[in-house]
Amino acid sequence: MMTLLDNVGMLCIFMGLPFFLTGTVGLLRFPDIYTRLHALTKADNVGLGLITLGLSLQADNLFIVAKLILIWILVLIASSASCHLVARSAIQKNIHPWVK
Amino acid sequence: MEQLLNGLRSFIVQKNIHLSIHGHAYLGRSVLLRFLLFSAVWFVLTGSDTASWIIGLPAVFLAIGISHVISPYPSAPLSFIGVCSFLPFFIRQSALSGIDVMRRALCRQLAVNPGLVSYTTFLPEGSARIFFVNTISLLPGTLSADLQEDRVTVHTIDKNLAIWANMQNLELRIAILWRVKLHKREAL
Image (cartoon, each protein chain N blue to C red):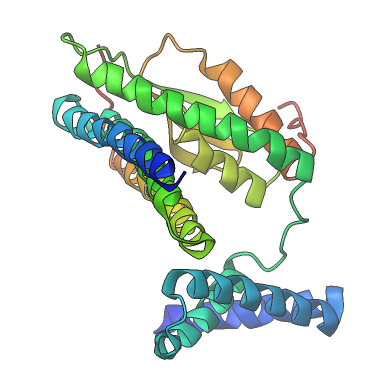
């Protein structure tokens, strides 16, 4: 049973990694500050969520699970708030979004 | 320094109004609840390490003070049914938004068609509206770029997405979650 949970956890962690990778690819390829923010916040949110899930499945006790989930929530709040602040400061500096 | 003093002054004024409306018992309860919440966060993060409270306790009191200045009136507790329906929705949408970014970033020809959209929210001022603005950035294809009173500037990665429908859907779910009413702004 323990090894099954460990393996499923490992699978989740491996599923989370491509999100970080594509988030970074997006950060490099996307044309302007706003689209790059899209890449960073969204891909990392899912990537971290999957890694949190994977580590929770491998955790020894519920306290560690609570800690992991709390970290995920705090990162979510920080990333969406900082994303909003970066975008707002860009708008106030009159940086126009890239258009096709 | 002057700014700090002004801040402190307005804080004291706010607190007095607060007291006259709700009384000391209310304030005490609000501070106690905040204390328990922030202490719980610190405890979960640091575990059984008692020495960490040398930093933790001042941090908790600082957090109580700051949160009190920012939001003196805690909102009503979230609706249980709202939480149960919002969580799966949020997790599903987050996953979709991650996959969406993945697809756009890996496309041989960059699949973006960005633009700005202005959206007027019907959510009342306060926690629910702030929550709305922050959640927008975690949903597929949208990012909240500015908030002026009830007008949210949304940046979309693809103008062909159904932004309006998505915003209205999210707004309704948040209204249920925070137990607030969506009120229409008076016609100009």
